[in-house]
Length: 217
Ligand code: G3P
Image (cartoon, rainbow, N blue to C red):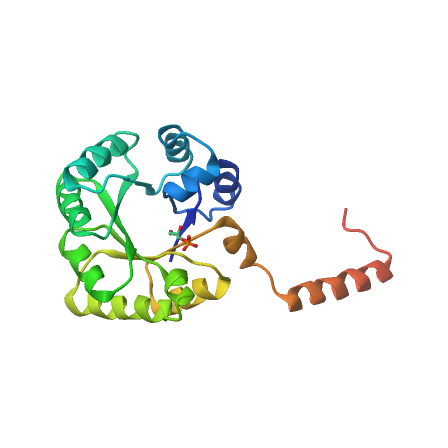
């Protein structure tokens, strides 16, 4: 399973990248706002650091303008994935931009039907938002499973990029279901290491080691 980091925070990306945890990066207008950086500058910096796909999102709502923005974003680096929203205009932009050889990430997906349309429009990635479905008492993980089944039924190659991940359980469940990629905030990825029995076990080992009076170095 591929790990994308859902942030425009360069230091956080660098820390995870040094451990081999970063197969790609996703950004969106809210994350650009949070970074306080210029979109073109920060996206270029991320692309220089990370070899895998880096999603940069268009903000226009009409297809022609989305396509123009997508082409500009795609000029930043070869590993840009242009992110477009799951609207009819977004699908038109997806079709054109993917036809020109760009990776396209179709975002704000909340249904199997939307995921089907994105696959048919040539999306490289489909981004179903798990957390935001859970927020309204629907089941985000069920959507990931449904899209997996439907894509497998017909052999669509669009990769399922589980997004809006809020907890480590979302990541484990996405892996069980067979999502191709997860994108999660850095703190959620780092939280995957935590287990109380690991902490307890290490404490006991260190306590016993101190009693031996030995040193390794
Ligand atoms: O990748 C999409 C993600 O950034 C949305 O997450 O937590 O704002 O729903 P969230």
